[in-house]
Amino acid sequence: MSVRAVLEVIALDVEDAVAAQAGGADRLELVTDMAADGLTPPAATVAAIRAAVDVPLRVMVRLTDGFCAGGPQGVDRLTGVVEELREAGAREFVLGFLDEHGAVDLPAVERVVAALDGCPWTFHRAIDRAADRDALRKELDGMPGLDTYLTAGAAGGVDEGL
Image (cartoon, rainbow, N blue to C red; front, top):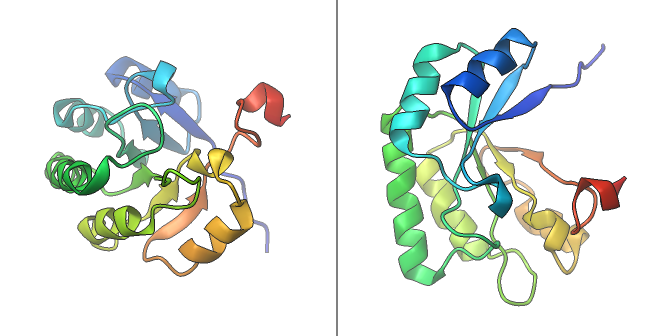
């Protein structure tokens, strides 16, 4: 059996999404602020893109630059955002949080994943900044909905990762 690679393209707005679909994208990752490695787009943008294209969408769940969830209050905000995004039509997500030691912030990830309620999700490039990638993958193994890791191959980005 052959497994075809998925071409996932970043989209910041409806114009990007329509162009990506026309260009053959299999899936879109919806973000804002690429300078911060992608932050959560507004729910209205997600709804507009959902209405404009018919390819699957993965929506970033990340409110601040860096890979910290922001403690209990930050996680509360993140779970609220997940609810808004789901109401806007999001059914797939991207997230990833580390603690101050570079380990997966498991309590934060678990709370956000619980808000996803079984939706598929990608663990974001936080894996590139993890102190121990193998330990991170072992901790996340079996998490409901986790089906993809997004990596540049190195903390410094794709150029360094190549």
